[in-house]
Amino acid sequence: MNWDGLYASAFERIRDNIGKVGNVLLAYNTNIDAIKYLEREDLERRIGAAGREEVLPYSEKLPKRIESVPQLLGSILWSIRRGKAAELFVESCSTRFYMRRWGWDELRMGGQVGIMANLLGGVYGVPVIAHVPQLSRLQAELFKDGPIYVPKVEGGKLKLVHPKEFKADEENCIHYIYEFPRGFRVFDFEAPRENRFIGSADDYNTNVVIRPEFEEHFGEIAEKTELAIISGLQALTEGNYREPFETIKEHLDVLEGKGIPAHLEFAFTPDETVRKEILGVLGKFWSVGLNEVELASIMDVMGEKTLAEKLLAHDPVDPIVVTKAMLKLAEKTGVRRIHFHTYGYYLALTDYRGEFVRDALLFAALAAAAKAKLGDVRNIDDVVKAMDVPVNEKAKGVEEALTKEYGMENGIAEVNGYQLAFIPTKIVAKPKSTVGIGDTISSSAFVGEFALR
Ligand code: 8BR
Image 1 (cartoon, rainbow, N blue to C red):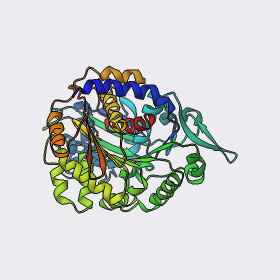
Image 2 (cartoon, rainbow, N blue to C red; image 1 turned 30 degrees about the vertical axis):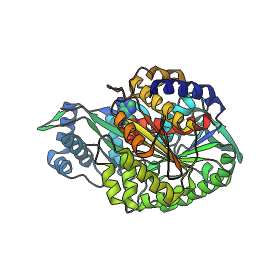
Image 3 (cartoon, helix red, strand yellow; image 1 turned 60 degrees about the horizontal axis):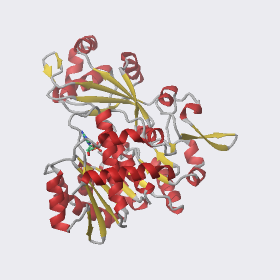
Image 4 (tube, protein in one colour; image 1 turned 90 degrees about the vertical axis):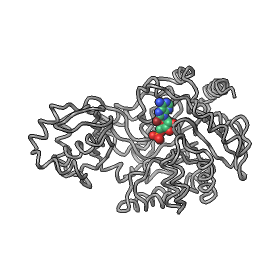
């Protein structure tokens, strides 16, 4: 297969047609990521000042949430000792103030909506309407220039303005990211691999607080919308999901009623009750995007334990198992498109047919590779700079398995009344950044598909 030829032509056609795509509604999560690169002396001094005996117990067992400075420092140590990521909600305002004074080395756009708004609006020039739970000055500055809009109501009238023009001086939703490299030492501990601990000083995204403009004027916002991408439901828990879920269901009904295709970006959702609720509304979506861990977690709540285990048993992930899981999900929920991505390849199962589905996946993989290679993608022409990244060799076996099992040709097969599209991805050997790659992949493929229709 001449994948590089297909890559090049998919990119060109999407670049030439992406200008046709109208407003994309993005809801609900946007925040500020504040990155702090940990330093040994600084951290040891802080632990000493907070009291070593107070701090150390939390490096053995994480608290449920952070209510004090020793809990914060202990949780950071917990991550360092294991080389594992963890994320906790920071409850106390004095600890939030402590983090704020500790400071950061870098600020980045956070939350799937924020990341996708900057990619679609700021890089591709596709107009987006974004839900930003709180628009502080710091948050506004993280938006790129371009056709990115937030709804603003003035004198009862709805206007669309760039986030920098919103000027409402709202609260900061900051996710403090404490990063450490492999081999990082504090006292006698040494990090077995690089990772991060995240303390979320954010009451809005964690509860999916929906802005009044979106509660009161959603019909009008939807009127201006051509496509929608929904994300951020992963933060909900059994304790807080009911209220936002009511509004979200209303929003989905409005979108469905107007025939606006909506994509759900299904990030890992630790709470099982919430995962079941999401499964219950999946049929209202046109499309869903997920990786192997997320697909396995859905199989789990569908009672498909064997499939869930098999999904996580092989590297690269067994594509026949993935296809079976996607079929189960599509048949159970009625969702029309499932986009699966893993390290090395993507699949899309759709209840409609056409090479444009595969070509949109190729565009997304090129965008992901460009992001990994360059760190920041400034405009759509930067995406093509990833053409020289080689197509993943390991995906050859995946392609062969799909050809043998389903008679796949040119990355397309017919399976149980659905079309299955496959592509091998381009993998950057030494990525500059992998933050937000999943969001880049899903939004590029979804929007790319509609550019080709
Ligand atoms: P998730 O965080 O949603 O799993 O998305 C990450 C995706 O990024 C993976 O599925 C993989 O396809 C892609 N990816 C990663 Br991780 N590293 C990459 C790299 N170095 N080059 C290209 N794609 C990469």
